[in-house]
Length: 157
Image (tube, rainbow, N blue to C red; front, side, top):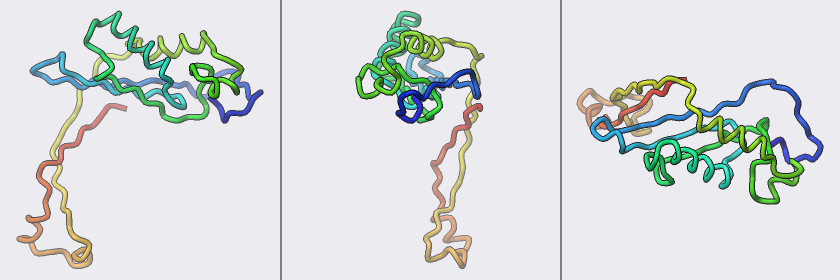
């Protein structure tokens, strides 16, 4: 995508770009799931999203749909261009690139890592009012400021 400057052409690979998919499913109903995919590109185009969904549905049926798949770009400016359907985005890239588009869709849909497990834990946080920041409250008051329901999730790198 570059910085929207015509004639800015990249050659070779300085740092590889990746997509990372995190699939979260309920243990009791594995068909109930949500997918978050982080892609090392500037942003997701509508055309890219629709084609990724189309390929996922042809591979997995109705398991992955518009309502449970989230594609998100990391907003890098060192990723490829030419994958948007709108004119304003392809001016600097001198047009739509079928080759780039195909590589991106295939890379997002392809499964090339074994599944990972999620680590979860419950964390107790003290939500101490700022008026008590310099002099901590008594142990009795401290219990009143504990948020007991916070659960955090650790995702693999």
